[in-house]
Length: 358
Image 1: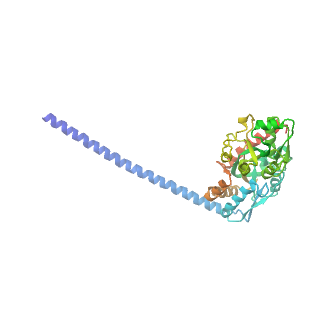
Image 2 (image 1 turned 180 degrees about the vertical axis):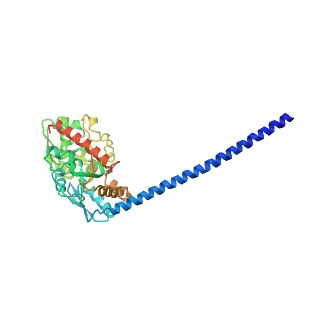
Image 3 (image 1 turned 30 degrees about the vertical axis):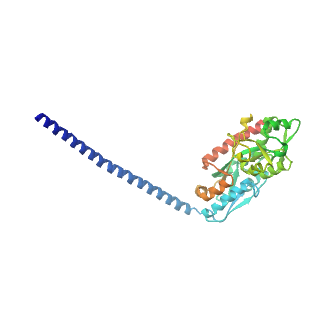
């Protein structure tokens, strides 16, 4: 009996100690959890403080000093113009001044970039750039400008493109285009020597073994018109800009320059448009656009414009309009990411030019 009583007392003591231990653990956990919550609050407060300081610093930057013009290397109504006008619409309230588009088409972007050289550092004016301005124009022209004359502020979009043929020819595939081209000189519509539309069209014709020549115009709009009116048989064009003419049956998509088959024309009877590579043509190419300022511009000015552009990009209304127009934002618009893409495009275009004998 004594032995049983002793065992019961021992068990009671163990339970009591365990309860004390659990209580102590709970009491210890509670302050730890509270400390974590307090630490989180402090971190959020620091972030808010940093944002407030950044906003104050940006407001202290005396730029712009007046209305802002965006130099666009394309004519009114072209893809570049449409995108620049959308950005200008939302950038104006962010900067607190009027932001307008200044179209300066010509020579595959050379005209706009050359004229922008007249701007001084910290100018109110912005250069809207396309890849061909730096990747192709210098290959074929003695340009007054180089990449060092500009400072990249922020990227905007990625442009995917395709090769299209006049529907009246009855051609549906690249193989059929090759058969049609036997004994002929096929004409492709482009913006002419010095523009990427010429270079990436010519390299595909060369890869297919097709003798070709360019019918020159000013941008994708002219290229589409030249194909549909019979002045040229094929053209390179942005997928979104060609869409309505694929839908109405004026042109036929033969291939895309991207790395994956394109399904965006499925509603128009083209379930998948194949890549050039899948059709045996070892060419892929996509381009980007971005905003730059004159080299030598104060870093504070660059950062203020970059922050304002980011606010535009984050605006749901801008996003909706941009997407509705068929454009695709770059996943990373930072200076580093854009600079890397541009370097890659410069290398790709140099290789294309060398392959076709410049």
